[in-house]
Image (cartoon, rainbow, N blue to C red):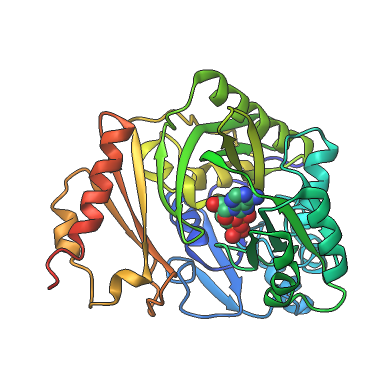
Length: 384
Ligand code: ADP
Ligand code: MG
């Protein structure tokens, strides 16, 4: 096998959002060049990359020529087709490999993989028609959640079904096209949502950032806190699941496992993201090595960095809604000396759109949470 991809080399990122932006910042800090490929321009990643290349993900020739110009390809957007990943792989190593994307970009394949490998998941069923949904509702019971198999994010492409007779309406509202699949999942009455971000190197070494506790609002991550306030055995089990998933999928790169902690103390895997994750943004300010630097180290074949948390931390997302009454008061947030402001360079603040985040450091996770929420409130406090 060839040696590590060293500083000075060029890393290609498929996708151009905030995950790519923070990855590019980490990569440039270590002396790498970064190229980004996506259908857009003036993107969050493109603004900090050496080159921003515009093209469609299904334009395989454009993907090939992008890959020709870099030493390794990674991605921050997981809905790249297998064909595009294969086209890129003709010219540069793709890490994680296309088969990892293939498994994780479709909820049915992902759940099939998890259940087959013995990882705990909530009961689920594949559904291709309203009739199949009715049958699945009998089997799984209500409440349940119906999700499109592909393309969902931030709660898009899913609908909760409170009672069996709501099945037909739910099927219609999801708008699944003929031939496409959906998955019905039993509704989990969870105590908490947790995540574990981990990375696996080319040599198979695995490093994780411990357990993060996540609060969602309108199905979008709102606040993440680390270390998560869970029992040590729960934390140990969550980390074991995450490292097991990375090993089973032979991931080279970063991956996040989203989990539910049920009220009776069981862990269930909700979903996987084969890349850095919103809940891991706090590692940028709170850990010796961030999730983005770890992704870089992994895909370049470098040794992984220490994941130790220097201080407890909390992250609060800044969604476009905050801009509704005008530009948020950035000075007010900067008055909190232990709060770090991250903005992604997006021009248009639509409701629900992730525009940036704040990270607070403190003596305890609870204190960090209070602090980050106070800083976020200060952004709009001056409004009448
Ligand atoms: P995505 O993050 O891709 O939009 P998720 O499957 O993670 O999709 O769902 C988003 C959120 O919806 C979850 O974080 C959780 O709050 C809620 N949710 C999803 N599936 C279930 C479930 N089976 N039971 C209870 N809540 C769920
Ligand atoms: Mg999710």
